[in-house]
Image: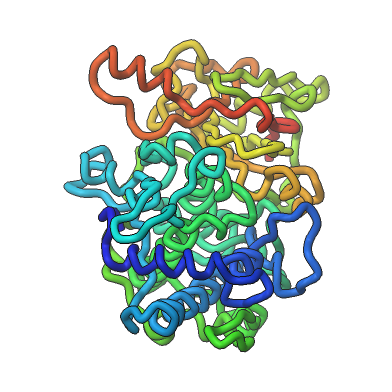
Length: 482
C-alpha cells in the first residue's frame, strides 16, 4: 500500500478520526483499541482487557491476528454505519518487504520501504483539518516522517521464511512455549525479530513502545506480518503450526463491533481464509536470500544445558550514540587460551556465542543498531551490513522508558551465534585466532547510500541521531563458548 490516497486509506483516515473522537471507555474508540496492546500511562490501568500484548512467545502471531481481525471489523462498522461508507472495506497491508525485478534497491522497491505517503502528509484531499494518519517528530523518527526508506537488511524476511519449524531456537514463531501470555522475554521468533521488531524501531516514536497501536501505521504493519505468517504456511508443505493443545486451545479474547466479548482459540486462527479474508498475494515480498556469510541470531536462553565457558566480557554499561562505537571486551583470566579458536574451527562442535544484555533506552532512540565483530570503526567499508563483519541487529521495541518493566526493568537480551563468522574471519586472514575480535555497534542508516561521493557524504551526515534524552545503552556484552 503506497498510493497517496487510495480509497481504502481515505476511508481508513475518516474512521480513525471518528474513533479518536470517542471516549476511552468505549471499546470501539481509538484509545481503547490501542490500550488492549499497551497503555501509555506509566502504571497499568485497572482494565484487565488492556496491556495484554504477547511478545517473545508462541502466541505472538495468533493473538495479533485476532487483534487486527476485530479491529478491522470495528473500523468497517464505523465506515458503514457511522460514515455511510462502503460495507466491503478491508484493512490494507504495508508491503515493505516487496522487491521489484529482484533488486531491493530499485526505485520501486525503495518506495515500498518508505512510510506510505498518506501517513506523511499533514493534510488530506477532501476534508478540512489535520490528517489523522500523520504523526510528526517526536512521535515518529525523523527519517520515517520525512520518507527515508528503511534498509533492506533490516526488513528482509528470508531467514524467517526459510525456518523449518514454528517453535525452537531459532525458528519462525518462538522458543517460548509457555501456557500464558508474556509481554516480552527476549525469546522472539525469527519473524518477530525481523522484520517486525526492526520495523517498529524504524518508524520510531510511538511505534517503538508498547502503546504503538496509537500510530495508525501499526495496523498496516501488522497486517503484513500476518500475511507473512500465511505465506510461511503456504510456501512449504512442511511448514506447520504448533499441534500442542496448550497452543491450539488457548483462547484470545477481544471485543467485536457491538462491544461484545468474542473469543478465538489459536486453532481457529490458523487459516485466514476460514476467518473470511485473503491476501492479494502470499508470494510477493517474502524475502531474498542474503549472503551466505550472514550468521543466525539465537534467541535468548537458547544455550540449553551445554557447558558454557566465559571467554570475555565488558566492564559494565555502555551508552550508545550517533557514531560507531567499539565496545571493549576484557579477556576472562580463567578462560582457556584455546577456547575461542576451537569454537572457530570447523573441526569441532563448539560454538561461540556473543550475548548483549540490558538493551534499553529512556526515550525512543529513533534508530536501530547494527552489531559487527572484527570491524574497524574508522573504516566505512567494514560497516557494510552485507560484509563479513556484520552479525545482526539490536532494537529497542518494548525496552523504552516504562516498557522495561515488562522485562523486570533490565531491558532486552540478544544472543548471536558467531561461530561461522569467526571461522570466516580466520579464513580471510582478518583474525589469526589470537586475542578477542573487536565488537562495534553503530546506528543503522536508513536505506542504501546513493551513488556519488557528494551524495554519499550527505547520506552519512543524515544518519539517524538518537535524541540526547533517549540515552540508548547496553548493560553488558559477553563472549562464551559451548
